[in-house]
Length: 230
Image 1 (cartoon, rainbow, N blue to C red):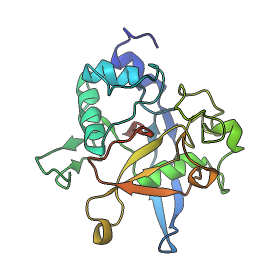
Image 2 (cartoon, one colour):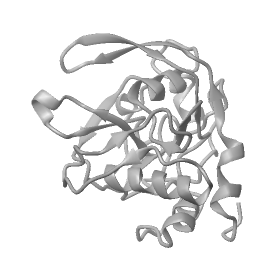
Image 3 (tube, one colour):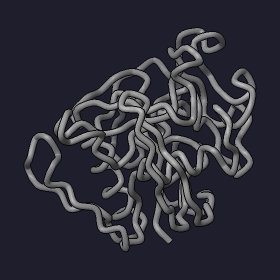
């Protein structure tokens, strides 16, 4: 995509339709499993890039990384705002209503809206696995940029092998924010992120690996991916 491309050209026609199904998620810290049903939805084939973020917001967080790398240094709250702005720019109904709570606990998602949103944690892992049940959907060096092959930096999206559903970078390159609160009783407003990043060891680059942080947290290996309801 060239820098002058519009948000409309950049995303809607490229999203992958994910079929409905079920997924068993696991939290290793508490040794807890739970089952989730996932309705059919659309998911972007790779994380939001710096060029798309700039096209929508007018600027991107400062970084030496190129325009086709995943945007990073974006908080959960900023990712939610981006989704609404992209929805408005492309003629869709925004999914999120937002207030002034610094912890983002007043953000409400309309799952029936046709605009862009973050995937739920269950949607994310279900799409990542693409029908597989192993630690990850392929050989790590083939599917992911991680500590052993990344050179300590994020890489252009879609330069590693996709999973069976055509999704790239679900493992490695950057972690990805999800909608869900991690554990409100223990961690309050902390939100989930998934997938492992360019600085991570193999243990962090697994389909089931869960991490969390405050919704205002920003770091150089954490981005996000777009979803839409069907």
